[in-house]
Length: 299
Length: 238
Image 1 (cartoon, helix red, strand yellow):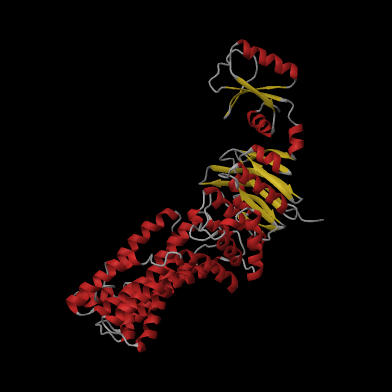
Image 2 (image 1 turned 90 degrees about the horizontal axis):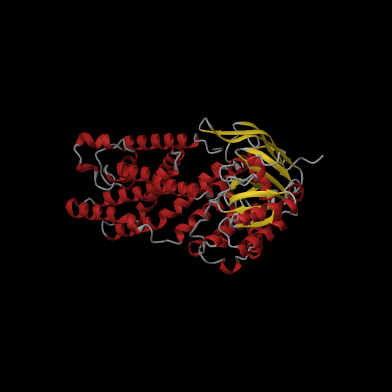
């Protein structure tokens, strides 16, 4: 039997004695592909990535990458993974080519191989045109792509990307998605994001995390299948929903009312229109499953 | 340790300095002003220039290296190097080598001034280079130790500035030791940067009241101490 790419058992991380970042996280990833770890800020996503890439030690529990324990066998783990850290910056006085090439050389790649990998990755990520311009003169999104290129050029078995598409415009984001899909044909890509639609359209497996605990895990379609309510009605954050008679969930987008059927939706819409409230309607998504799990809306 | 990884990381760090070849000029202004005052006032400019070379090498190994590593931590670039086959000791050696390269430009300028003003023969050159390497080595070990001690990378810059004041500008590194009263001359020789400068004076043949053995013993003691402390830093996890 093949070893799982990642195996995590009852993982706990406590900072400064009482800040619990991870609270008994367990999961196993057996197959290559793209895994999206989603959750709000402070959910524990970055801490989990830091433990899996040997940047920080767990307080309790076990984390194994490619069969290697992250604490005991950290050198083996480091030789087989590649990382894009969150909110990172490239070396500003280097050009994209120098950045990718010399990062590969620092990992021990021979000259010609590093040159080939750097060229291929820069081209794939649309950076070839700016390969000789120093990073200081590039836009924030392009600098982010230089970091992604540096990490993806590495022939690793597992790639960890911590919120890699933050700051990218929609076209650049899709370009990165395309490259990640290519990389995931032969390796595991483990990425964190707080864009639920990114996880939904990109990932083969989605792990939802909140307050250091996994709240849902599965393929995007399987997870969507778990949502009993098919529609969401969004009202203004300040809308008076006091005596509506429907259950209302507060979210970052505003107040949400979920409807299981078209009949129930019609009932809700009529009542809101009668009261003269502004609202919008759309089909539920993974984001709604997350909201429901966190708020206890559906089981 | 793999040489290819060390060279790769060293070049990665050096390239940013190569793009700013004149960045050192601002660092040399105050020391060169002190040299001019010393040369015109006492005629002991050679001591001053040797002190500047020691200061340049110590600062590059010590403060610039610590600042660079702190910057990489703030930029999270350090995380990319940690999560890679590059071993902590390889990264440390690469940083040290990168900062040795950084010394070349300012040292060349100071050597040129030395040749043009106080006069220095080609025979002294290897001994001066040895002095620079000694200061770079001790400064690097010191810088790695200081960097490892500071949990907050934002504090590295202010701590480096304070140490620069205490170890380079205040003690008789750039100005002659002989300006101090005799009892303070021996005390000042216990400061690592002053001891390094006195060793350089002895090697090049510039007279000093402090015995060579004392300066050499202090230099070796500090080099061993800082290297031991640097190697004991937890460079692996967290």
